[in-house]
Image (cartoon, rainbow, N blue to C red; front, side, top):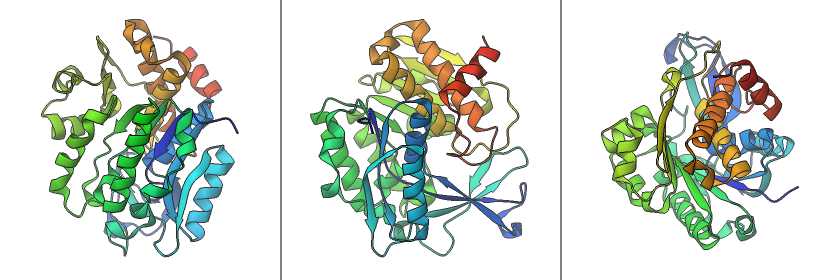
Length: 325
C-alpha cells in the first residue's frame, strides 16, 4: 500500500438512515445502516479518486467496529491509525430524511454523546510514521467535544506541524455531539491559527464569523491559505489565495445528501495532491479545483449513503465532461 498523502482524523460510524423519508423521528418504523463519519468519508473518497489516504480514529471492539474496519480496508484506506476500545461501543447516529433528500440528525439512541469509542481516541497511540510522508491532515471538530479525543487532535496538529503538513479543518458543527454546545465556538476558534484551509457550510460560517462571505472570513483569519463555504444547491463560494468566486451547484437528481460535503473535501484535496497548493495562486486552477470538488459532491447525492455513493475518478471526469461549463 502506498504511503498516504492525506491523513483524516476523527470519527467513523454508522448513519442509521430512516427508511421513511419525510417522517419525523417518532414516526419512523425502520432504518438502514450506512457507514459514515466525516473524516472516514473523506479518506474513502480520496482513495476512490486515486489519492492514497489514511484514517485515524477509534471504534469499539464490537461487530459494528469490525464491519467498519473491514470496509476501510476493502476500500484501500490505510488503517494503521485505527484504535479499538474494549468496552465503549462504535458510534451509531440516527438520521431522518426529508422528501427532497436532505437529512437531519436525530440522536444516538440509548447512549449519551460521550459514551462512544471515538471519544476515547488516545493521543499517545497516534502512529508517528503516518505523518512522515503525508501532505495534508484533515480534522473535523466533533472530537474536540471530548477531553481524550481533543488531546489526540492537538497531538495530530503537533505532528503535522513537525512534518510541514497543511491542515484542512471541516467545521462540521453538530451541537448534539457536545455536552456543552456553548463551549464549541471558543474551542474551534482557538485552533484556527494552526489551520491552513477552512471548509464550512454557509450556516457554520454565519455561526462562527457572522458572515457567509468567504473573503470576509479570510480577512478575519488572514493566515489561512483558503476558505471554502458550501451552501447545498446554491453551490460553493471560495477565497483561495487572492482568488475569490462562486461555483454554482451541478443539477442532479438527489437521492440522499449524506456525505456530499465530505466528498467535496475529498475532491478538493485530490486536486491539491495532483497540482499542489501553489496552484491556487492561479485563478483558473483555483476555479478548476472547486469545480471538480463540486462534481464529486454532486455525484455523491445521486445514490444513498455516504461512502457507498462516492464516485471514482473516471465517473467524476465523465460527469465533468458531460457538464462542461
